[in-house]
Image (cartoon, rainbow, N blue to C red; front, side, top):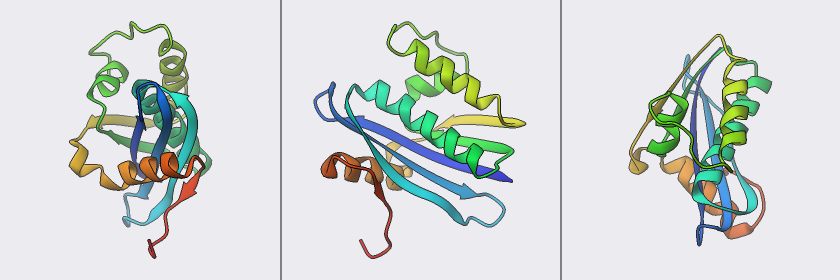
Length: 142
């Protein structure tokens, strides 16, 4: 199975209350397989972005994905994962290593940057998790 994973992370206050949004679609039929926001407590924006990546990769692996396309509006993280930038922040190095390790579970992976307006559902889920200070799932009734 080939999946597209849209991820977003944010913190209010940087650091502050933080959340991540993860949306996973089966690319064969555009079916949504996972739509959730996760509250991660006090964190920075960059920690939240990496946490969203990690959560998205874990869920995609659990769903049996063999190939993934990760889409994020964090240009810094995308360039770090793709090897264009080094990870200098000590607090991000373990998250980077965990992300690279998780990417190794997939036969093929790509990661691309998108503009915030093209990542609305993941952003909305991250904000809902921050608002609720709890994990949330998407409901079409909302």
